[in-house]
Length: 315
Image 1 (cartoon, helix red, strand yellow):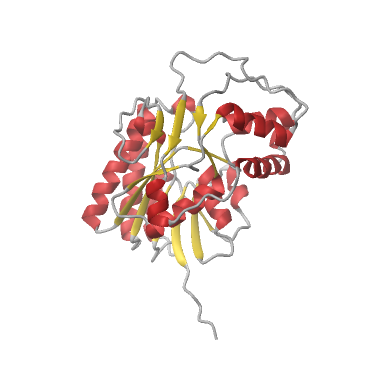
Image 2 (cartoon, one colour):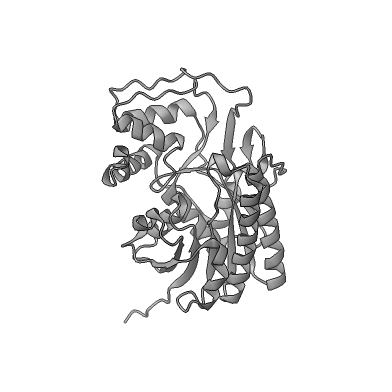
């Protein structure tokens, strides 16, 4: 007779974001028990219902209340993806970004109170500032935006707290992730929606080298890092597949509507345009065995179907 394997419990903030929703999806029917923390009343909460996760309404500013929530107690891992002010208009708002640092620190303290062995903090490529080419865990951080500065300080402060608590700290700096629940004004989402509406998009010449990762692959990478990542290690999160941006755009056109012209080259590059940004994922692969499984074409197909299902191209 097969013994029941106890589930591993994760407290997940930012559960309705592109990666958080991916974690909820890939954990359906698995040995992961997800407590998905969502903003009360968010319109995006409906997108993660029905996948078996325990939905917990809690604002990030009140994250410490999770320590008194019986559903969250005796958790194994805390994955902190929650972050306010990610849209362009708010990325330079120092007050908003400072609140994010405070929330991250509070989340780390809460993870300790809940008995978590590991705190995983989600950083960003913005921590590297204006760099060109491949980003590695060892690359010096020189953030320019208030968003990037806040991500770096939050990562550093939670790492110090974890040392005090004897809790493992994993630091994942995330590059370009796309998929269901992504913001609709991103290049991938906006292009899909325009093509579904029969409109021609416009782009730069698209020569910049980029690395796009589908959300379910990103989710699996973070789950592996939570279990197998090395304490105190920084990891760069990407697909490891580097292509010119125009190649990605042409794949989107092929999947969504190959009859509409794509307008590649109709917009000039900005004077400070970054021409290459991709992740060195060798540390991620070496420590966890991670292998991305979803091709860009398949990821676009899934994202297109999700947009159509929820009629987001009609808004």
